Length: 70
Image 1 (cartoon, one colour):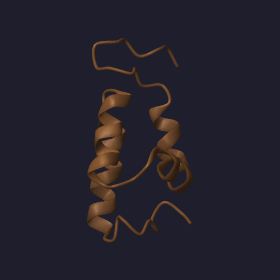
Image 2 (cartoon, one colour):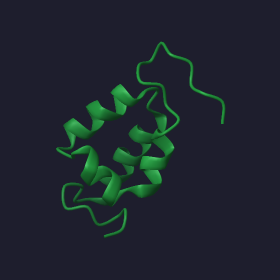
Image 3 (cartoon, helix red, strand yellow):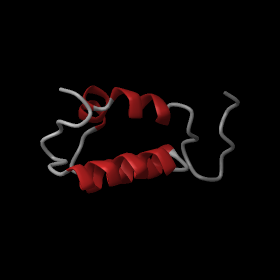
Image 4 (cartoon, rainbow, N blue to C red):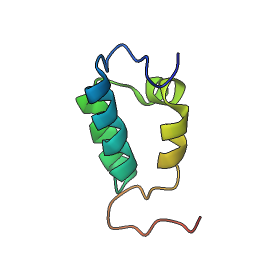
């Protein structure tokens, strides 16, 4: 399965909106909320969207924390 083939993200527009939401999230908590909105578990997200999952690794757990240096 590649990042465009998720069953829960059935349209290109929805998939693009999902990707943009993940890429602009300011914390892991925000990403978790996005996953809940799309009925995706963290495991399904990691398996179906490995590139996006890597993007979220450097995010702070809550918005107030500073992100670690890259």
